[in-house]
Length: 301
Ligand code: HXC
Image 1 (cartoon, rainbow, N blue to C red):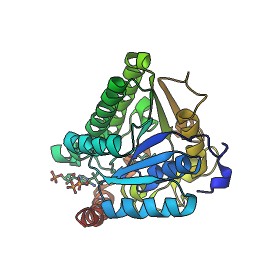
Image 2: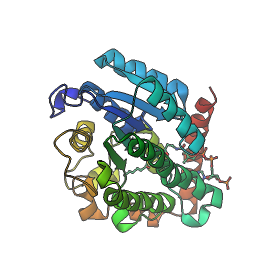
Image 3: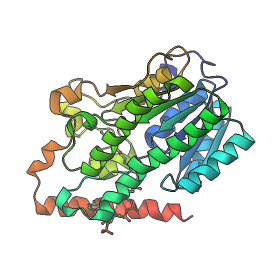
Image 4: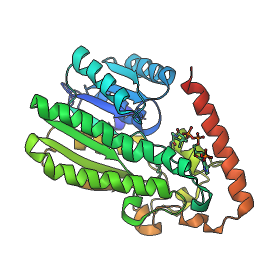
C-alpha cells in the first residue's frame, strides 16, 4: 500500500489497541499497516506463527510502533481466550477489533462435503462469533468502549453461487453485527461491516480466481467493474480507519460496500461460473488443493 494515500493525519489512532484477525497477510495486513502508521498499537492473529512474526517485523521496521503477533486459530474458543488473556495482561484492553480472518474457495455446491462446508463456516461464522463474544464480554466487564468492524462481501445482499458456505457465513456475521449494534450500543460498543469488492490478495485469488493475474489485469472482475479496475488497498484502509477512528462514533450497525459499484453492475459474485463444465471444475479444484496444501505445511512450522 502507498501510505502517502492515507487521508488521515498521523497520530489519529494514538491510544488505540486494535486486533486484526487474519492480520498476517492480505487485507488484514494492509489494515494493520494503516492502523499502525496512524499511531495505533496493533495485534495480529493468524494460524501461521512464522508469517505473523515476519509481518510484525516488517511493519514495525517501516513505521516503528508496536505490532504484537499471536498465532491464534479462531476456530478454537480456548485459543482465543488464551491470546486475549495475554493481551489484557501484557498490554491492556483492546479498543478495536477487525474480524477479517476468513476461508473460502470456489466449488460447485454439489461437490462439497459437510467437512468442506465446515472448513469455511468454522472460521467465518463460528470463529468470528467466538472472537466477538470473548472481546465483547471483556469490554462489558471492564466498562470500556469498543469498536468492531467485520470484513464481509456484497454477497450478504444477494448470495453467491459457487461460494455458498461463505455467502451463508458472511450473511450470518452481518446479522450478528446488526443485532449487537443495538444490544451492545448501551455499553459504547459499536459494529459496522465493510464489503470489499475485488482487492486482489494471494490467499483469495488462489482460491477464488485460480490462474488469474493477481493485479487483476486479466480478470473478469477488472473488465466488468464500472471503474475498469480492481480496488487499491489504501481505499479500503481509509474506509476502515474512518469507521475505527474518533469522530465516527455515531455510525453504528451499517454495512458498506467498497467495490466501484460492481455489485450494482454485475451482482458482484460468481454467477459467471455457470458456464464451467466438469473439466474446468476438476482443474480448479486441483489448483485450490495445492494452494491449501502449501498453507497447511506453513502452519506446522
Ligand atoms: C470442494 C473442497 C475444496 C474444493 C477443500 N475442500 N477445497 N471441496 N472443492 N476446492 C474440502 C475438502 O475436500 C475437505 O473435505 C474439506 O474441504 C477440508 O479440506 P482441507 O484441505 O482439510 O481444508 P483446510 O486445510 O481446512 O483449508 C480450507 C480453508 C483454506 C480453510 C478454506 O483454504 C484456508 O485456510 N484458507 C484461508 C485463506 C483463504 O481462504 N482466503 C480467501 C478468503 S477470501 P473432505 O470431506 O474431502 O475431507 C474471502 C472473500 C473474498 O473470504 C471476496 C472477494 C470478492
